[in-house]
Length: 148
Image 1 (cartoon, rainbow, N blue to C red):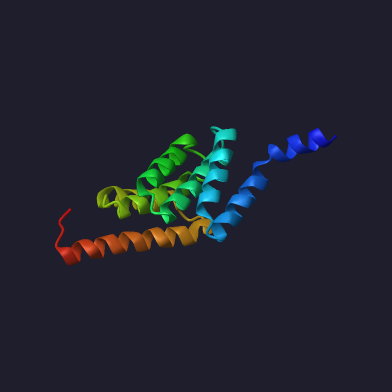
Image 2 (spheres, rainbow, N blue to C red):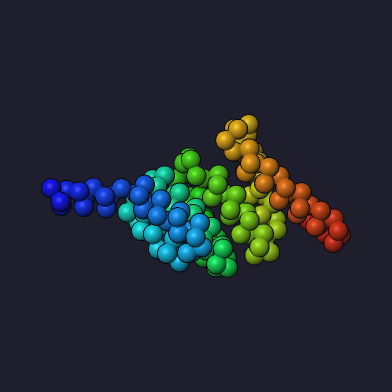
């Protein structure tokens, strides 16, 4: 019976996800990255993998590991294109690309997010954030005389 309980708890990504999100809230980015990678490895080609990669990319972003974050978020977006977290991966990927100086790619990503979120009220905050990012990039361009 104990082995059955242990097997059940080790297979439940929701508990590991909760622990990873708790680590992130406490600023324990490295611990969160490890937990999230484990979830992604144990649940390939699923929404669990996608959510884990999205959060792992955010943790890497917070730690200044921008190239790694870009790779992780790209993998998350591509791993399950129709998944619930694909658009969130796209949003954070655009933020990372902006920080890396890839303004055109960032702008394109934010515009895709705006389109993908549509009128979904659950995503209105992210849509507003994407719109603010687009406006910021456009203001920055106009103040520098950038004609891209």
